[in-house]
Image (cartoon, rainbow, N blue to C red; front, side, top):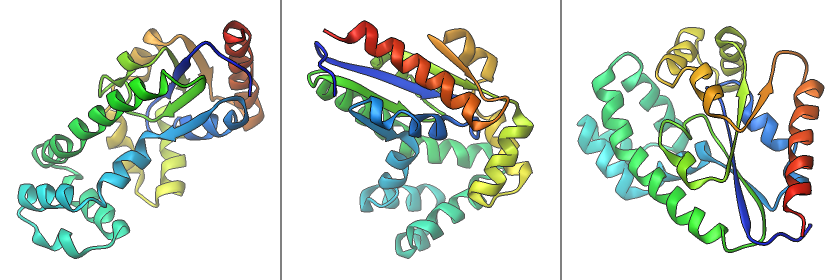
Length: 206
C-alpha cells in the first residue's frame, strides 16, 4: 500500500443495478478498504432495536422472529407499492445509516489510504458531503433492472420501481467527479475504474 497524507474517501454510486458493487470489486487491491452501503443496511436489520422499531411501525410483530433473509423478503412485500410504508422503512434505517457514515468518515480520514464506500443511495442520503470524491456508474434502467432480477430474484417491475425512488442517473452524473460508463462488457468498465484509481494514487502519493 502506498503512503498518503491522510485518509481519502471515495464514493462509488449509481442507481440500483448500475454496477457500483462490481466496479468497487475491481479496485480492492488499489485501496485500503471497501464498504458496501447495502451491507450496512442489512447489518442494521439484524439489530433487535431496529427490528422493534420496524415491527412497531408496520404493526407486524412477526418480524422479530424472522431470519435476515425472511425479513428482507417481507419488507419488500410490505413496501412494494406503498409510499407511506416505504417512508416508515426509510425513517428507521436511513438516519442510522447517515450517522454511521458520518462517524466512519471522521475515523477513516485519520488513517492513511484510499477508502471506498459503494452504494446506490449515497446522494439520496447526503452521505456524499462526507466524501472527498464521487464516482458515478452510468447505465440504462432496462439493463440495470435485468441485473437486479438475476441478482436479487425480484421482478422487473420491482427493480424499475427502485429506480423511480432514486435520483435520476443524469442528476448523479452531473454531480460526479468521475463517470464510468457501464454500456459494454465488464472489461470496459474495469479499465475505466482502474484508470481513475491510477490517477488518484498519482495525485495522493507523497
